[in-house]
Length: 190
Length: 190
Image (cartoon, rainbow over all chains, first blue to last red; front, side, top):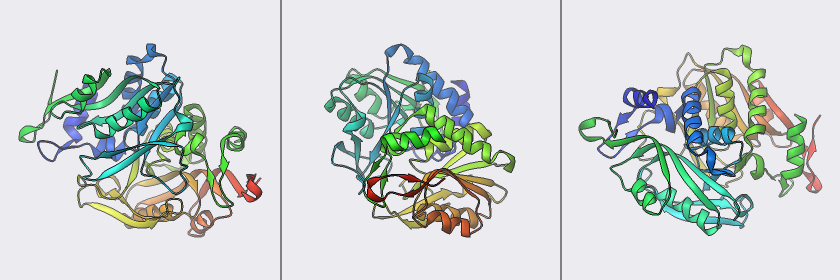
């Protein structure tokens, strides 16, 4: 994904050795063309996996997860953060810390939309510490559904989320891997 | 949009005279095919308006807003709820109550992604009381951008959001209009 690397170099803002701001292409503004190319690439990597449902955690993963769902012809379920008054009690929920937000949130999925016979492909924008990802994976396990893998746009290799998820035996695919943000520079892993 | 009406009748859950739960097709699970048809229809209604950007408020409006953006070939900006630690101070923000969540939230848009020469089409899933919508419209006004209109999937005619926004002179298009939820039944307005 050379086009994506180029956009990260041009539009990403390194805020610290740990934090890369990608508001221009992932977390606040979306380029539909780039997102479509990225989503098709992730869909292609899991096309042979008999996926029945795409899942993500709101919000930044929704656009790319939507493209993957459209491409594979399956529904998209986005886990909600926090309980709303309209929510029913028929939900799986997990409490997770958030690295970037500095707060704890509950993520929840209605039992209505996640079943034991589902084969789930989990799509997200970025994997850093992986707290929300591990929370959603726990929910998928509690529902006794099958997680066929996880696809992300950006993997930050210097944080432990991706490796901790691979250690659980989950196949994790990333479109680009970032090795370091040191000295204000984005270094990709080849 | 007969297909959409049918899905609302089959999968919507009337929780009260005021609240219709559409988790199965809009707020938690998404059918990419239906969403694509809906997004193309909204895009068609505003195609002659020289739209430069689609805006929505996270999260449920993101999938359909993404389709409209892809269809019109323009970026999508989704307003964020609440400030994150990663956020910069260069944002427009508005505090809005939320009818369904029973809480107050701040919605924010970075100044980087909203300019005076922008022609904005605002896309959302449902308009009920319109609090978040009026908040985003205020932000668009403060940026001195042009709001060419608003497109929603569902308009709840018996709440005042849509009429209050039309009274401001905003062109608001809805794919379906719901007249009443009385006696647990969804009644459409023809």
